[in-house]
Image (cartoon, rainbow, N blue to C red; front, side, top):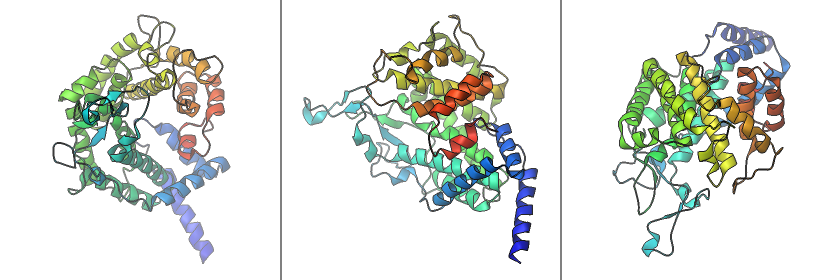
Length: 398
């Protein structure tokens, strides 16, 4: 009897694998996900091993307590805990001033005081959980993973008692100076990953059409706030990585909500940032001016890789775009790599520890985009251990 049940379960699983449609993801590689499912169907041993590890991580997340902006012990000046709130990481109590105010800036030195406000951490945890759970559902068809992801999404975006208001008016506040600023918009990068998770869950029984529509409406409201508010306009105009990440987010949210015309407009506009940010050698001078120049150069490249990935959905090829200085996204990557990999001595500031594993998804994607196996070889050298999701999304073995 058990053998019959096992055979039937396996048959149903294979039916799920073979009948599922190509997912409408924006940052993940949809074709890659389809190929992974084919490998599962063909009982490919390395793939099955990764999926088993993914299921273990997803099973652990089934016990995760839902997170929300109302979890924080603080209340923004609006008086509404539903408003996202955070404190600027590089500003510190000034002992030379009465009550330590206004706080003073120490670029690159993170103030642990910021951890007392939990909104940013909670949003990051939501992103990681939803990405893992949605992938587990998409690859296995096990509805319990979709049910958990849906519950987490409802708690953050939809439930009246716990949902976040679609604005960032009070992000990265500086005590004694401001209650919030445009720079804080960089803290919602996680929303791009969550959007892909929502798209992956399409077709599951647990995320209803109504809830799916409501989440899209929330994103549309947040995008409108980004494009029209004072804080949004400030970040939109930022010349360094903040401006790049604004484009990465706004383009993603426009595509997610079906506003392809706005997404295409923003992609075309973003070319001006490539023009101003990357010099002929590939240096990004505004990032090199920071106290963690290596880290911020990598961070800005991460943003450009996302913008270029999203641009493909608008029919624009940013991967090959060359600015007036004769430089491109690839030029910036190639200039940075010898320093990031320790092959050349870094002569700018880097006061914090540099994490080479941040290069892994960039190198893996560059290998595919530029059809250069050398990038894949380098990716294998920096691949983080036990990064199951990363291995599924980026490893060059599918």
